[in-house]
Image 1 (tube, rainbow, N blue to C red):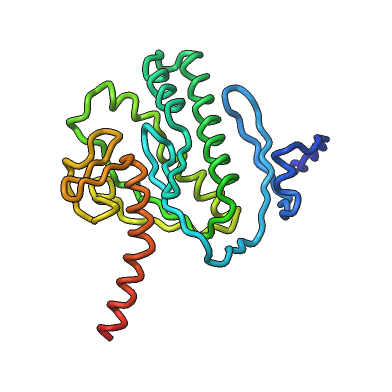
Image 2: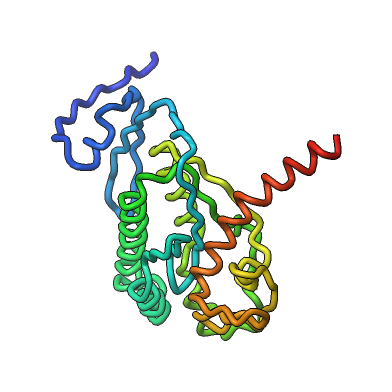
Length: 237
């Protein structure tokens, strides 16, 4: 009295996305899901993660106005995404244009992240801030908060985590406190030093792009602090 399973054979051609996983093992199970009244078939691939030997480290600052700012002074997703966030915030929620822009935003974020990994194939260790518990300040303007909700930090971080694993890059999370207020040259901390997109140290006078400055601090905090703690523990023992 049990119903038999129905086998459906669906022929399809490989394309640039599936060819990326030609050396991976494809699982027998698949997932079918519905999104925006369209059905999608999701194939599942797996492979053993082989991490690169320690060579080059990089720190990145994830931001609202600049999607990714790197400690090597490269930037991804600057004015284009910032303008897109503002454009989405002005559309009527649930409207066709609103949904279309949301899909376009996700596509653009993926494009910039893919571009970052394509241009940084030589890195072995990546350091980012752990912003999961960070909340927006209440004194920020309502218009800015409305626009910032389309930043989608979780999407960016999830994508970065997946591509790091796929490319054998070690991903390290660091404490985010004061990375934007600390001078990457002298180490002085002052919230008055940052003025929007510019960081001007109130102690040594150093002037630098604020997000670039933060990315350097993230790299230093990830590389130097654990090393300092390691030696401190050894000395104590």
